[in-house]
Image: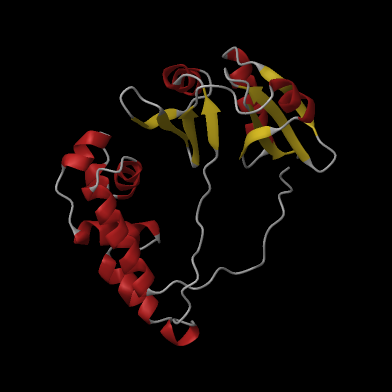
Length: 227
């Protein structure tokens, strides 16, 4: 369960070579028509902001574009600004470190019907479909704000429903920043006719949360601070 503690452990200092590798990876993803990268490009580069995923993947995209995207993702206006900014820190960082920095985690839900699940997340929970994959689709990703959830179609349930409900085995945990937001989210889902496994309540560890049950029985925890 979320504890809302703030970590004081610093992540390893990145270096220019790592950024170059990130840019080359983004470029390769674009060339391979890897759909999740289209969302990154659209959100990071203003000139792509009004384009659809297929349009972005069909559009010309060079290494310089990928480098600009990496720079903007790290708070710089351009690749040159990023290089200049990090060169001034070279005397204060151990540039020999190659430790990977994990920037996100994406839960994967096992579901029976991709369309029905996407309709639930978009129509009831306010997500958007990032991409679907396969003919017919058997894999998809939905997103809302910074949250990403992957959906994988399977032929039969992979977990006993009674055990899941009895032990409250969560498929995903999603958090908001304030007590007011978690209340607003609960009321919005209530109005949308969402099925709740647990309604909004305050927990002893300082959180206020509720649990949604999706059409496949997956339990989704939505949590925020109590105060």
